[in-house]
Image 1 (cartoon, rainbow, N blue to C red):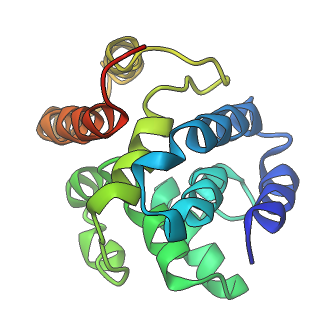
Image 2: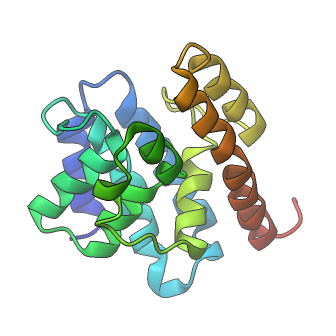
Length: 181
């Protein structure tokens, strides 16, 4: 199971969900562009995980209402490789929000590999708006704050705890990319 199958599944599940397919499509183009930041043998894995990272938003997949976990559970049920499933489960610092929602034990079923592939997935997600526009990380972070300002206090705290993690991950990818041309 690779990128082509991932695109077909994402299109099927997310085609009618807001502009979520545009988000994953743009993020996948970014993944292709920054693939050199991960080992050569992990480049297709990166693009595949980026394409699938938000399938948990599809109504037919939702179980817990926490899209990283719902997407991972769905992929596991379809027989996707554990690394893809785990990257989806833990994408973009999901552990911070899972803890706030009391879902940490369910998320911990999936290994959190960290490292260059997880960083690159986060970078692609955090430089693409939900409607599929590329933006600088700082703008995406600002938009996240604005979008979630009315969230319950426990979630706002979790997002504040998550922010340094996001910043560090993006900085690692930018360092791997080297100086801007």
